[in-house]
Image 1 (spheres, rainbow, N blue to C red):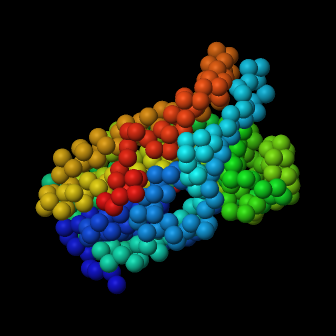
Image 2 (image 1 turned 180 degrees about the horizontal axis):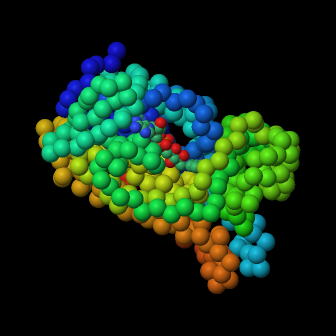
Image 3 (image 1 turned 135 degrees about the vertical axis):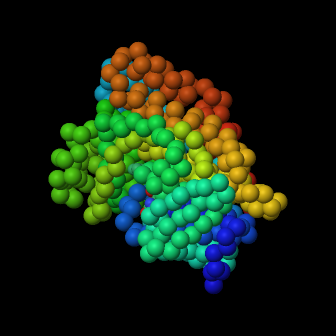
Length: 403
Ligand SMILES: Cc1cc2nc3c(=O)[nH]c(=O)nc-3n(C[C@H](O)[C@H](O)[C@H](O)COP(=O)(O)OP(=O)(O)OC[C@H]3O[C@@H](n4cnc5c(N)ncnc54)[C@H](O)[C@@H]3O)c2cc1C
């Protein structure tokens, strides 16, 4: 049974995977926490490739065993240059076994992950869940006053804003965002296929962007197909059978006959980074802090590291009786997240722009880079290790330790 909200704990706003993880991590660390979130409608057909650190965090939070059966291991990641350019990059395969791991991580449907997080959130006595949304937030010197949809006022020394890319709380904190919209849209769809995927994810680089097939349990995979504006309408107008054929063609029949599932969604591609990750007693986590294009499975992995880090900062302040919304705590959170977010955002943005460029020297440099990665084992292995466990950010949960 959830306890009544405590005034000395934080309010977490947003019931996406980042907000739920932050709320669960805080409550599991015995910090009295209020979560303001509508329960998920289950209409997100995306999947998330969660890297090993994220899986370790979910295990430590008692969430992973609730959704493990719905996740498929990622043992091999293949990059294939399918741009048809004059200077083509070599095919390259990263294998988890090469760095002593069973898998780089696991791919899971967002709705299954969110359901597991919700189930865990309901079981934690220190978590008080209010099924509502925040309509206004006003920070002052020693608290943030929050108004809910049904009118009830709340106040807390800190608000953890996990309210997504159009964050109302970020605006209330007066934090500006650097944003760029790409001329690309991602089509997401899941499909079954004739041949086994053998726990391999394959990213075809096409002139419009990546076409990435990621395994799910059984003979089932998810697809993120990055398109230019001219392609979107045509593909969305196709019947399921025609889209299945188009996917089979684009993937060079890698998985044999393809049968798409009925749900398709479009996500316009964007990169956005908040200039500060915290201010005026409001800390940003997940897409309220940063949005990256769906390349190289970075977005939610970053969001989960935000959640783990804010939980660590807040729990430490709470245990020592310090103000959890103080300038010191917020500055520490901002500092701990900056390098990780900036370096990943830079890499993903550069990678996407490189794929889109027609400038021959850049294409040549890209091909050379992949050639060197393919040929030089230590370079490849250090890139894989950095991808799985970033040296810039290893909060305790990502190391399998409680907050
Ligand atoms: C096509 C695609 C594929 C991707 N694949 C991967 C991948 O393989 N690996 C990976 O790591 N990342 C991936 N990502 C990124 C990942 O999906 C996002 O980072 C993640 O979903 C963001 O989670 P979030 O909790 O920050 O935000 P959201 O999921 O947007 O959640 C925000 C929540 O806040 C709620 N909310 C908003 N305003 C309010 C309010 N005022 N009051 C209360 N609640 C509010 C919303 O209803 C929502 O529930 C992908 C993204 C795309 C587009």
